[in-house]
Length: 215
Length: 128
Image (cartoon, rainbow over all chains, first blue to last red):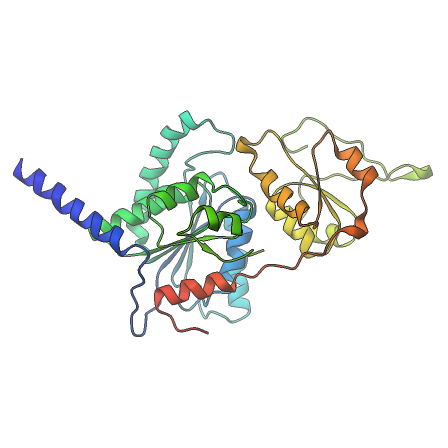
């Protein structure tokens, strides 16, 4: 009993500690390259992510792990093309990118009720992948796929497995209301930095950073 | 086509008839867009911005069946800013009849560098 109570207490203290530090940058004197998880989503999500990656310095965000939903055939292909172009343009010397698929939390149009079960399945798969990757940076921009991954990344921080910085860019298609993923990450204070592309959203969600349109 | 049940009749456009070609996927969609004088598209953000960045006049048709119909927010916002015309399947005909393509304002492409700057600063990387 005492062990359980102590464990719960430690967990709660760690949780409060991580929540307190969420959003506070840990400035290091000369930061090392950071292993980066990039969550891709169907349609416009991947296009927006590629746009963001093209203005980030890739030697700072390496090795890179791309994850897309199992039913999404195009996104990983686009990521491979992007990585190939980096090699081609000699931006990077060798290929340090890995491409993975994950079970989807929810298909477009799937009812929210059945989504609970599929999200649990996706979460188990996500845990398996996250234990292997243990990223220091998580970049995501909207697809439901990112929720299990971000929650697990956050838990890793609480438990002490791996500290990470979680960045969420709400999709450009969200003008007046956040997506479900965005709402969850915002309300639960899981993302260290939460970006929105339209001023209407920044007014509604003051902890978000308004960064204008990416596309 | 796609997830729908309607298949348009292809035609090479003889005798003043409309030329119609159809495909479910084209790796050279950019070429098709570049050579178009008008684009009518669904309201997906990828399709919208790919067309706007090429400077093509665009009519967006919003799919009313999508869960919570978030696609319409973007189409309506860009229509309000006069970058495109917005229509529903039922109103498409009226929009085409009444459109004035010269009144559309060009869309200035967005920029991801503000996000990159904030991310870099947060992680402690020096500004470029």
